[in-house]
Length: 125
Image (tube, rainbow, N blue to C red; front, top):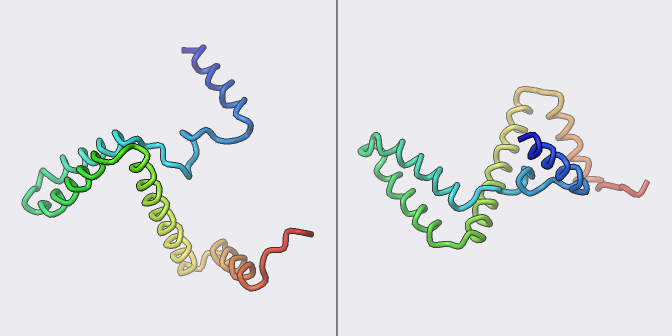
């Protein structure tokens, strides 16, 4: 076990400064199998109250069937796009809520974004 840990550290050190895919937060690392397992867990939970959740269960079963029919590369691309969209929404909501709560960092970020929009970003200096 010690040998595996030291080998992993060496591998990380020799990766030329880039994050390996499995550690890059901007890339999905879930496999098709992982996504299907998560769907199964959700279905198990919803099946406990089938009467109230039947529409959701049928919809999720349809999604699961679609995922099962697609190759791994297609599933990864679709889920990467979906997760990227969700992350963008969460980011925008966080900024909006921080502005509403009058947090200084959110005001500063808004000013910087506005300045870049109006004046551009000059990095030649």
